[in-house]
Length: 191
Image 1: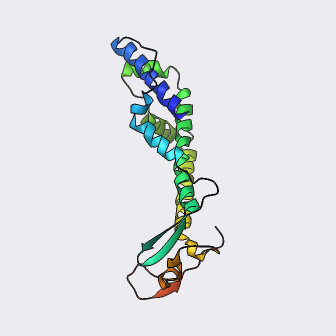
Image 2: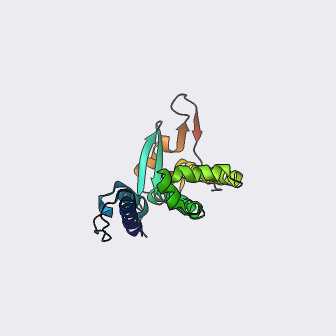
Image 3: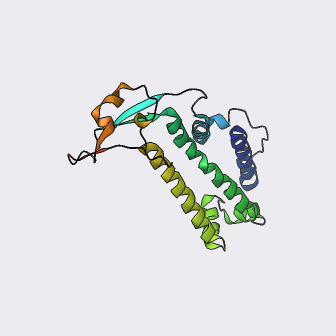
């Protein structure tokens, strides 16, 4: 579907160039046209990377001299949250589809009907409060999920394989390496 989206966009650009500048219209879009665009490859990376089923792995790192162990499932879930940008496409298309004769107005005014116009429509209309609250809630929920997922260490789980979880800095943490005060790291049970 992502490939088809970029192919249709290429066709739309050709139609606009034909109408505005009388360039010859070629309706056959080659299959490699989407592959030449950086946005296509960026979306393929965001949408395609995931943790395979029945595969687990641990990744450890030192953070301010405190050892943190992450499971690949947690990191992949945080990566999957990046797919929330797909909602913007739906909102973008629904707002622009409500504008009457949008292509004619854009052609006469030499305007680009993009995300800036959609944001302006959403933030000045009667649904502006709902748009702001929705954007705030989604960003807060994703930030909170990332914080909680990246705060938890897999050394506190029942099963772990990394031998560095036996070290003192995996169980007793320091506050940012600035003080000598230690505390015992405990994962919150209520995720």
